[in-house]
Length: 171
Image (tube, rainbow, N blue to C red; front, side, top):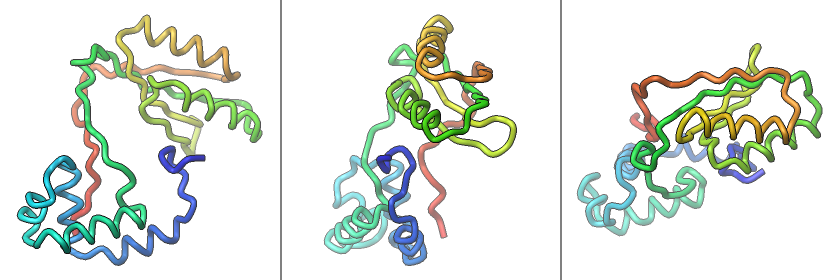
C-alpha cells in the first residue's frame, strides 16, 4: 500500500529520525507546515540559520520520510463542498479479501479525505467532503455497491471548530 495511505515500509527508520531532530529541524518543520511555499531565504531567516544548512536539513528530512510531500490546503466551502460527514463503518467481515476490497473502494473515492481503522465497536471512520446530503447519498450508494458493510452511521458536522494539518513539532 502506498505510503500516502498511512503504510510505512520502514517505521524504524522514521522513529530513529524523530529522535535525531534537533531544535533547528523542528523550527524548519513548523515554518514549512505553516507555508511550504516560502522561499528558502525566507525559511532560513525565520529559523535563524543560513540557506545552505537549511536546504541540507530539508533534503535530509525528505530523504528520511519526515517530510512526505508538499501540498496546498484548499477551502472546501469555496469549492462548493459544504457538507462534511463522519462515516462510522461496522463490518461483520474481517477477512483479508474484504479488507482489500474496502480499502480499494475508499482509496478510489475522492470524497474520502481521511480514513482510519479503529479499535473498539466501530471498525472504520471516514471523513467525507461533499456538496450536500444528496451527494453524500450518492457516495454511500456507490460504497455499498462495491463492498458489503454491516452497518453505516453518518454524522453531519454542523460546524468545523478546528481543522489543522500541522503536527505538533515543538521540543
